[in-house]
Image (tube, rainbow, N blue to C red; front, side, top):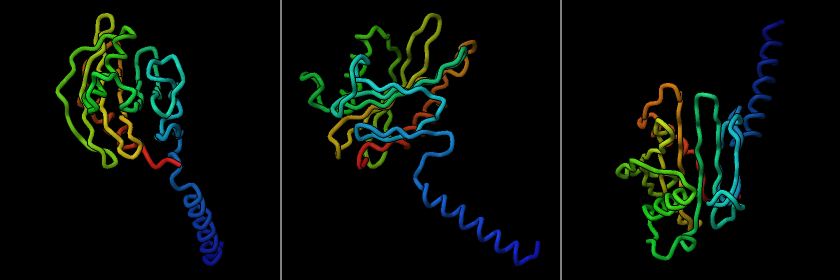
Length: 200
Protein backbone atom coordinates (compact mmCIF):
# COMPACT_ATOMS: atom_id res chain seq x y z
CA UNK A 1 0.00 0.00 0.00
CA UNK A 2 1.34 3.39 -0.95
CA UNK A 3 1.89 6.13 1.63
CA UNK A 4 -0.94 8.15 0.04
CA UNK A 5 -3.37 5.19 0.29
CA UNK A 6 -2.34 4.60 3.91
CA UNK A 7 -3.05 8.24 4.78
CA UNK A 8 -6.49 7.99 3.13
CA UNK A 9 -7.28 4.81 5.11
CA UNK A 10 -6.14 6.38 8.39
CA UNK A 11 -8.26 9.47 7.73
CA UNK A 12 -11.29 7.30 6.94
CA UNK A 13 -10.83 5.19 10.09
CA UNK A 14 -10.35 8.32 12.17
CA UNK A 15 -13.49 9.89 10.74
CA UNK A 16 -15.61 6.78 11.44
CA UNK A 17 -14.21 6.39 14.98
CA UNK A 18 -14.69 10.06 15.75
CA UNK A 19 -18.21 9.96 14.35
CA UNK A 20 -19.12 6.96 16.50
CA UNK A 21 -17.71 8.62 19.61
CA UNK A 22 -19.69 11.78 18.85
CA UNK A 23 -22.94 9.88 18.23
CA UNK A 24 -22.57 7.80 21.41
CA UNK A 25 -21.14 10.52 23.66
CA UNK A 26 -22.66 10.31 27.11
CA UNK A 27 -23.59 6.63 26.69
CA UNK A 28 -22.62 4.12 29.43
CA UNK A 29 -19.16 2.57 29.21
CA UNK A 30 -18.82 -0.88 27.66
CA UNK A 31 -20.17 -3.48 30.10
CA UNK A 32 -22.46 -1.00 31.86
CA UNK A 33 -26.19 -0.27 31.65
CA UNK A 34 -27.90 3.01 32.53
CA UNK A 35 -30.84 3.15 34.93
CA UNK A 36 -33.11 6.15 34.39
CA UNK A 37 -36.35 6.41 36.31
CA UNK A 38 -38.23 8.59 38.80
CA UNK A 39 -35.90 11.51 38.09
CA UNK A 40 -32.72 9.55 38.91
CA UNK A 41 -29.97 8.23 36.66
CA UNK A 42 -26.81 6.15 37.17
CA UNK A 43 -24.79 3.47 35.39
CA UNK A 44 -24.25 -0.04 36.74
CA UNK A 45 -22.39 -3.20 35.68
CA UNK A 46 -24.46 -5.53 33.50
CA UNK A 47 -23.76 -8.52 35.80
CA UNK A 48 -25.76 -6.92 38.60
CA UNK A 49 -29.46 -7.70 38.99
CA UNK A 50 -31.77 -4.73 39.53
CA UNK A 51 -35.01 -4.60 41.52
CA UNK A 52 -37.20 -1.50 41.80
CA UNK A 53 -39.73 -1.17 44.63
CA UNK A 54 -41.23 1.16 47.20
CA UNK A 55 -39.28 1.74 50.42
CA UNK A 56 -40.87 -1.27 52.13
CA UNK A 57 -39.74 -3.57 49.32
CA UNK A 58 -43.24 -4.89 48.65
CA UNK A 59 -44.95 -2.27 46.47
CA UNK A 60 -44.13 -0.20 43.41
CA UNK A 61 -41.81 2.81 43.39
CA UNK A 62 -43.30 6.25 42.80
CA UNK A 63 -41.76 9.68 42.33
CA UNK A 64 -42.45 10.43 46.00
CA UNK A 65 -40.67 7.35 47.33
CA UNK A 66 -38.83 4.31 46.09
CA UNK A 67 -35.78 2.10 46.05
CA UNK A 68 -33.58 0.72 43.29
CA UNK A 69 -31.52 -2.18 44.63
CA UNK A 70 -28.66 -3.83 42.74
CA UNK A 71 -27.19 -7.16 43.72
CA UNK A 72 -24.34 -9.41 42.63
CA UNK A 73 -23.89 -12.40 44.92
CA UNK A 74 -21.74 -15.47 44.53
CA UNK A 75 -21.04 -18.46 46.75
CA UNK A 76 -18.43 -16.58 48.78
CA UNK A 77 -19.00 -12.89 48.05
CA UNK A 78 -21.71 -10.24 48.14
CA UNK A 79 -21.99 -6.84 46.51
CA UNK A 80 -25.21 -4.93 47.01
CA UNK A 81 -26.11 -1.28 46.82
CA UNK A 82 -29.21 0.80 46.43
CA UNK A 83 -30.48 4.28 45.72
CA UNK A 84 -33.56 5.39 47.65
CA UNK A 85 -35.60 8.55 47.54
CA UNK A 86 -38.33 10.01 49.72
CA UNK A 87 -40.24 13.28 49.87
CA UNK A 88 -40.06 14.96 53.29
CA UNK A 89 -43.87 14.93 53.56
CA UNK A 90 -43.77 11.11 53.43
CA UNK A 91 -41.64 10.94 56.57
CA UNK A 92 -43.31 10.55 59.99
CA UNK A 93 -44.58 13.84 61.41
CA UNK A 94 -42.45 13.53 64.56
CA UNK A 95 -39.23 13.53 62.49
CA UNK A 96 -37.29 16.63 61.51
CA UNK A 97 -36.78 17.20 57.79
CA UNK A 98 -33.01 16.75 57.91
CA UNK A 99 -30.40 14.47 56.37
CA UNK A 100 -29.95 12.71 59.72
CA UNK A 101 -33.70 12.16 60.10
CA UNK A 102 -33.88 10.72 56.58
CA UNK A 103 -31.31 8.09 57.57
CA UNK A 104 -33.11 7.40 60.86
CA UNK A 105 -36.34 6.94 58.89
CA UNK A 106 -34.68 4.39 56.64
CA UNK A 107 -33.18 2.50 59.59
CA UNK A 108 -36.67 2.36 61.14
CA UNK A 109 -37.99 0.73 57.95
CA UNK A 110 -35.09 -1.73 57.93
CA UNK A 111 -35.73 -2.56 61.59
CA UNK A 112 -39.39 -3.30 60.91
CA UNK A 113 -38.30 -5.82 58.28
CA UNK A 114 -36.31 -7.66 60.95
CA UNK A 115 -32.79 -6.64 59.89
CA UNK A 116 -30.50 -5.72 62.79
CA UNK A 117 -28.19 -2.71 62.50
CA UNK A 118 -25.13 -2.22 64.71
CA UNK A 119 -22.10 0.03 65.08
CA UNK A 120 -23.41 3.19 63.42
CA UNK A 121 -20.38 5.47 63.17
CA UNK A 122 -20.11 9.23 63.51
CA UNK A 123 -21.23 11.15 60.43
CA UNK A 124 -18.79 12.28 57.77
CA UNK A 125 -19.56 14.90 55.12
CA UNK A 126 -18.94 15.34 51.42
CA UNK A 127 -20.74 16.87 48.42
CA UNK A 128 -22.26 15.55 45.21
CA UNK A 129 -23.54 17.56 42.27
CA UNK A 130 -23.66 20.69 44.44
CA UNK A 131 -25.52 18.98 47.33
CA UNK A 132 -24.23 18.48 50.89
CA UNK A 133 -24.05 14.81 51.87
CA UNK A 134 -23.72 13.12 55.27
CA UNK A 135 -22.71 9.47 55.53
CA UNK A 136 -21.72 6.82 58.05
CA UNK A 137 -20.65 3.19 58.25
CA UNK A 138 -22.65 0.48 60.06
CA UNK A 139 -22.78 -3.28 60.45
CA UNK A 140 -25.37 -5.95 59.62
CA UNK A 141 -24.97 -8.98 61.95
CA UNK A 142 -25.38 -12.32 60.15
CA UNK A 143 -24.76 -15.60 61.99
CA UNK A 144 -21.10 -15.54 63.12
CA UNK A 145 -19.99 -12.37 61.36
CA UNK A 146 -20.99 -8.77 60.73
CA UNK A 147 -21.35 -7.52 57.16
CA UNK A 148 -19.79 -4.06 56.67
CA UNK A 149 -21.99 -1.38 55.13
CA UNK A 150 -22.09 2.35 54.44
CA UNK A 151 -24.95 4.77 53.87
CA UNK A 152 -25.42 8.46 53.15
CA UNK A 153 -28.15 11.00 52.47
CA UNK A 154 -28.53 14.32 50.70
CA UNK A 155 -31.38 16.67 49.85
CA UNK A 156 -31.92 17.51 46.18
CA UNK A 157 -33.38 21.01 46.23
CA UNK A 158 -34.39 20.77 42.58
CA UNK A 159 -36.73 17.82 43.17
CA UNK A 160 -37.47 18.42 46.86
CA UNK A 161 -36.53 14.88 47.87
CA UNK A 162 -34.03 13.20 50.14
CA UNK A 163 -31.85 10.65 48.38
CA UNK A 164 -30.05 7.83 50.14
CA UNK A 165 -27.24 5.65 48.80
CA UNK A 166 -26.15 2.53 50.67
CA UNK A 167 -23.64 -0.20 49.91
CA UNK A 168 -22.83 -3.62 51.37
CA UNK A 169 -19.73 -5.47 50.23
CA UNK A 170 -18.05 -8.73 51.23
CA UNK A 171 -15.22 -10.01 49.06
CA UNK A 172 -14.80 -13.35 50.84
CA UNK A 173 -17.21 -14.82 53.41
CA UNK A 174 -14.51 -17.31 54.47
CA UNK A 175 -12.16 -14.50 55.50
CA UNK A 176 -14.48 -11.66 56.35
CA UNK A 177 -13.03 -8.48 57.77
CA UNK A 178 -14.42 -4.95 58.01
CA UNK A 179 -12.66 -3.06 55.19
CA UNK A 180 -14.52 0.19 55.80
CA UNK A 181 -11.82 2.31 54.15
CA UNK A 182 -12.05 0.43 50.85
CA UNK A 183 -15.84 0.32 51.15
CA UNK A 184 -15.91 4.10 51.61
CA UNK A 185 -13.92 4.61 48.38
CA UNK A 186 -16.33 2.37 46.47
CA UNK A 187 -19.32 4.22 47.92
CA UNK A 188 -17.90 7.65 47.07
CA UNK A 189 -17.29 6.52 43.48
CA UNK A 190 -20.91 5.37 43.20
CA UNK A 191 -22.11 8.63 44.74
CA UNK A 192 -20.29 10.62 42.06
CA UNK A 193 -22.12 8.66 39.34
CA UNK A 194 -25.66 9.49 40.48
CA UNK A 195 -27.68 12.27 38.85
CA UNK A 196 -30.68 13.29 40.95
CA UNK A 197 -32.18 16.12 38.89
CA UNK A 198 -32.38 17.46 35.36
CA UNK A 199 -33.23 14.03 33.93
CA UNK A 200 -35.17 14.27 30.67
